[in-house]
Length: 519
Image (tube, rainbow, N blue to C red; front, side, top):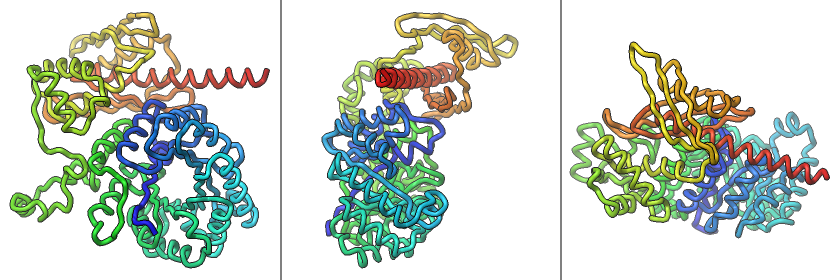
């Protein structure tokens, strides 16, 4: 049995489906590229049959990713599997992941079928998927609550049908580590053809045991863990990738196992996912939380000053956290910015140096000193705004005060047209939003959440605004960053508008395809 544990990342599928707002295709690709740099073995890019947008984003990721296997999810249904095959066909390496429920409560209540019928459906699904690829994964949904005799039967049938990976999910996070480990052990002891497939686990965190259950399964022979960045996902989330990866790295001498994860990419990937998904990481979160490498107790501080390993079992540098904060000013040149970004882990091809430097100078003029966290925030936002966008902010002026009515004037580029409007509102942000809606002809967009945060420290920290808006039954998330709160809010709304524009284009393309097919 191999000593490598494969890391199957489902941030873009299980993680994304639980977010308050959908990710755009561009945002999903950003995350996929970050996961590729992180070294994950399999990227579950989405559920292609679920929507035209998901189909297109899975196809785009499949085309762009070269160093990881791209995977799509499908129920044990013909249309789902065909959608996966078509979306993934552009990839160099791809996997179809098909599933069906196996517990009594799911088989009887949800599927309303007999156990024999469910086995037949699973076998048929695996065989159909094999028409597209030899890399087929089958999942026994709610395996944690499935009778062991039936689970063994299902696993044996799936492997015989051609599944090269069989996943044993604790779908509702119900089992304990000893219980879940025992399930995996029994499968290895009782399924005669189990050596022909990799056994995978997908544990949810409803009882806070996702990582512990995954580790127990690994110790019993499982060699793939399905997880997400920051542990995001349905309900209480999934097994956290950064936690299981660092457990295997930090305790490698005891466990004798390893992954292909490049641990120095963990912090950067965590921040990207947190930003794009609008899911803040709690301060005491293991590995990537703000306090993960902080020491408050005087005794702890004294110990760390004498020897780091008194209270640190891993270094912040091992997960990509660089403690060296180099202060930058408007007198810093391009070479300094380039050097600092390289030290922070960003390759030159990851950004446009001229664009980043221009925005850096504006920020340095506004707040004087620019810190590492400012530079990373600036780089993140620069990647969003410097791509081709249908809506662009050209000019913004806002007025407010105790004795005046808040007002704003906004000039935007809409396609190839420049439009200027002025409006009043309850405050300067509201006035700016009214002006933008006037420019767009008051589309049916509802702002359902507006969150203001600071990036950095002190009174001169950057303002970050996160907006969630509802449009045509879907929710879209936008992020804005600026030294001025009003500008940050406007940037966030424009981010949302560009995402809705892309969604409209995808829907229109689908309608055109259906019309052509109808003819």
